Length: 246
Image 1 (cartoon, helix red, strand yellow):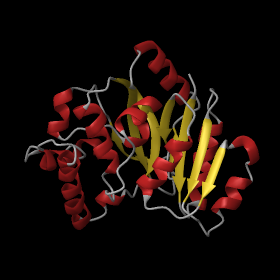
Image 2 (spheres, one colour; image 1 turned 180 degrees about the vertical axis):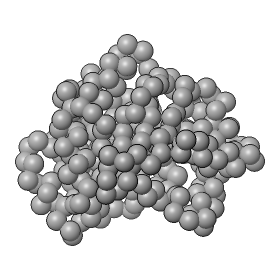
Image 3 (cartoon, helix red, strand yellow; image 1 turned 135 degrees about the vertical axis):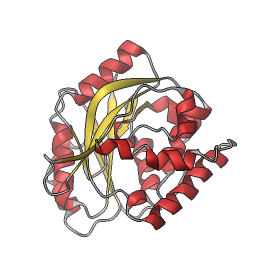
Image 4 (tube, helix red, strand yellow; image 1 turned 30 degrees about the horizontal axis):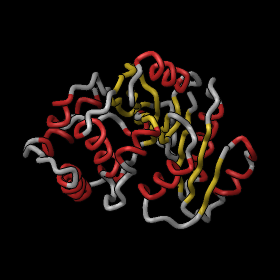
């Protein structure tokens, strides 16, 4: 089973090296695809310094982060696709080995795990931990979703159910999970350990206004799939994050 990892980046030369090194350190072969949005900070010089250690690289303007992810998926030749952005890195070098083993042993369409948010400058300092827990279909109504960087999907699921919707600014990953896991009920297996570390500073949580905008996008994620989102889901979804600090 072949694995493709997609990294999207734009002017993240300061953190992208950690991402690349964490992929190169893995104990299984990986097709690493980097999709750059046309960086001007030396990002491409950094990428090019790795030569053929990075399987595929494209750089140029895009229509946002989800358009960039779609470009990567379209380039991917792996049976399984994961997305690891330029602020993220795998916790240790056997993460992807564990992911592939889970796919093979559980015979599922998707695999996910946990995530740690870390201080952007001192990445050994954990700020909070996102424990996903085992998936039940009804959990989406209670505001559940797995952390996107820990979510791995078989490529044929994207072929069957479509790519990321570029009409979303920050909830395209949530919409994809609602579409795959809730609407189409693809099978999933949970790995009860931290797979990814992410530097703090997500788009949807920077202020109350960003949170309100995120709530609107969350509702839209259900609507575009012909689903009715319970009124309490937008309340419970951010509240679930409170427990991540304890």
